[in-house]
Length: 561
Image 1: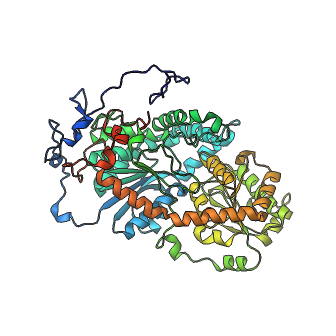
Image 2: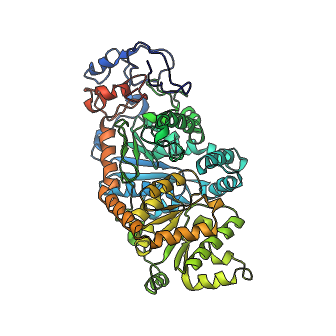
Image 3: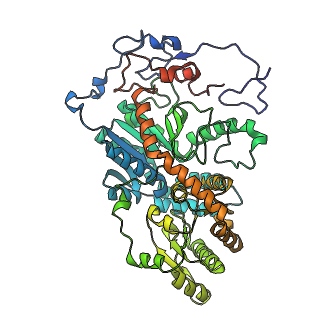
């Protein structure tokens, strides 16, 4: 008899012998477990004393940590700390969510690195900033990526990131991030932590006995519906669908214990927590227990039917009224350019960057592809530094003259304002730019540089909303010229992009995400005691038979395993 594999597959044939089912157990919550402690049956979960603890379970005194809620502050706005680590594309969706939460009365603050902290300041949020320059770091990562042989963008980016973090120039500052994140938590005293790509924040939430929510820009949790985003759907399609979930677990295991988990041990040491496990015995190197909002549209990725309830696809976090865009005024030369001819093609690659030679190559490719099609364009230089000033006045004189007349250059511009005024969008495939382009109903060309961008390009291609090219380092003039012509002249592609955009706008991802956060943080059984939870009753939403494993030592097994 064949059975499904356990959590970590030992081999790929999956012909494991059937073993008698063992009784699910739960460790008593509320106290760090450093050795073997008495375990309780999951059926005992309902046997709660009036003080909120399991029968015979250890009592935890919140007053010892100074965490008792002051009755005089019961009516104060709930404090939410966003802990983010990345470029503008990683942080912009969180700012959109923060604007929505601020409108609902939450007191919001951020922890962010340079230069993204400037974006946070412009939106009027308190910001605990750190002087790690993510632009310099990303420039090094992408430089290493471009020097690698023909690897997928995901594998190449992962390898380059690990090598960069080991560099003496960044190692010291990266190692100090847990210290700064913990300091921000102890100073702001949030009631909820929301994080993306910064795993020490989860340990800080345990220290303060508060809920934590993870924001994923890509589908992270394993599913049998599709392969992990780091793997090509074309190579792992229906024929290999039986590999999707095992590959997902393997990918998550590597992700959890590598790049972004490097500061967890340091953070737990500073906070005085068990270095290897949470209070109920859950391993700290396991992201799968954290309630997660995957902020991508279900028009592109439907909610997997085998995900547990604490994993939710809530929709893209689009810009909210009251954000930076509300106060942005377009410069008169831009308005004049837009009114002076046909709708231009937008070209910009956000926070993608590299060395001088690659920036010149990219600038030349973009301007010449517009010239070949006789199209006007708006080119945002971004971190890539694209500008006609990089071109050689002797070798590229014709391109420079064409660009002066037909290409408007800017350093940056709010996508939500600009994209509806363009005919098509050429970009790197970052989640934020993708969401802005599709919400505007514009077909797009995606030129992937790193990590998840080829995955997003595949989604757009499958929906008929655009074209994905070769990775940027291998991009040719002919390929880019043909791609821009196709998305700009194909009427069916424009209709498909408009349909997806309308469906996205109806989702209201920000409101759905806030609703999910409020639902989860009120009752979800974290592997540590939550100071605001009512433990006098069991929550049926999280304890029904299908998801009873969340309360057990096998909490991370999928419900069908």
